[in-house]
Amino acid sequence: MPDSGPSFTVRLAESDADLRAAQRLRYDVFVRELGGGGAMVDHDAGLERDRFDPFFDHMLISDDSTGQVVGVYRLLRDDQAAKLGQFYSEDEYDLGVLRQSDRKLLELGRSCLHPDYRGGAAMFHLWNGLAEYVAEHRIEVLFGVASFHGTDMAPLAQPLSMLHHNHLAPPELRVRAQPSHFQSMDLVAPDQLDRRVAMVQVPALIKAYLRLGGFVGEGAFVDHAFNTTDICLVLDTARLNARQRRIYSGDRGA
Image (tube, rainbow, N blue to C red; front, top):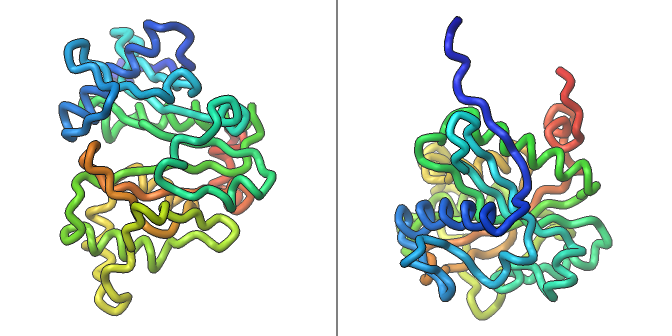
């Protein structure tokens, strides 16, 4: 019989060992690979962690053949954020328009895959797991920061401007970078944009949210500690078309 490829299990972390497995993968990707850092990063143990971790749900995907955690997603519902006192993104973005909407919110973050599993089925399974979580908790709006590598605006001018001009959130969803760290994304005039060049530079995760109908907030946040330029993505499940909505409705039909 032909090899059908690896099989995966998607689940929420249930133990300290599960959380450490997530933090270990995050260290490999965000610190070793991308050069990030942070006050609570444990270089001796190889763990990327922060003060928010205890409040989040941590979604893990593991390769059934090895048991290795090969992908993670960090999830924070609004009821969890209430216990924490804030969403993670609020250090970077004013989320007032979302908080005032009285809709059920879910913040996404720290999404990453082991290099050997990128471009394959692992991300599909992780997204299916996220879809089930969204359906179970009746989430209406998903949001979270996503990153471009680097903090120099010059090489990011085309993709940031393309997102600003073509995918800016409508006013009722338009979060805005905090004034103290606001970096304009309007860096190239619309008539000087090269969309093809710009899209090549957009990370795969951001492209995936755009395909689902996601928007970006206004302004970027330059995170020198993490060596990234962050944007805020917002996805309103009510705005998805029928084909896209199946991902977030729990409908597995054709």
